[in-house]
Image (tube, rainbow over all chains, first blue to last red; front, side, top):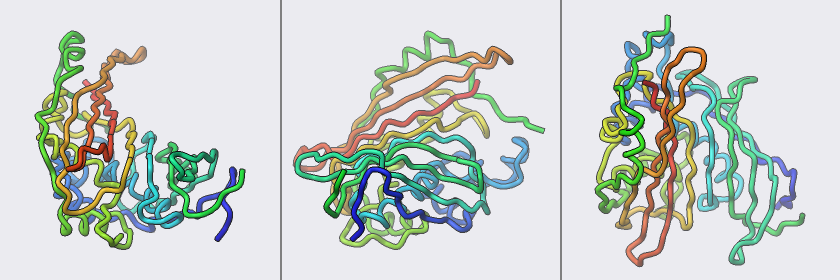
Length: 138
Length: 152
């Protein structure tokens, strides 16, 4: 396994194509009445021609990146800000960098700067804390 | 053209009176089918071992606290497309969420703030709520603090 250090890059995770059909399923699960996620007529007055992805789905791509890196039960904290809306059809790439390492109750943890990008635009930024599977050095 | 809807007017006094408003509270069990669909929506492989995808911390706390996105919109006066924006989330996981566990869930409105644009005079209110999930042994499993922006 690769040693985790401050400055370690988390392997990126890509959502190739934000899918409007998934937004519809998500809206049903969330019981989300906000029509901007599934009705094109609702977003046109806002100046958009594509429906807007749910914020939790944007966050899920960051979670997927972290879980692909350190396992399905690794996430300890997600603290994010939404900076731009995400639309159907967008390609998004999640990125992360380790900025701190600590031990809590015998568990090694990494704090990471994380961000979700659409091309050169950042649509979400924040920090995440994950439990590490492996030995660390600082 | 940008013709977004605006949330209902609310006095600053009424806005601040929302702080401390307790959600009804209740219990919530995450079913396998729900977790499967949720995980599929994220583009992830299924997690297995009854593990729930971390993104469940949006809707499960809301629904388990005995409310809904629609009721929260009503509480803060949101109305129509463009009247609500997401500022951010702070989600803490003290233990992994699992399918089939009956969680006790309680929460409240914890913070509000009114801002007025110097350029347009338009009002945007920050609306923050916190919800906690406790397992059947009384152990705190997760806490969410969600920040919304209500455009009036």
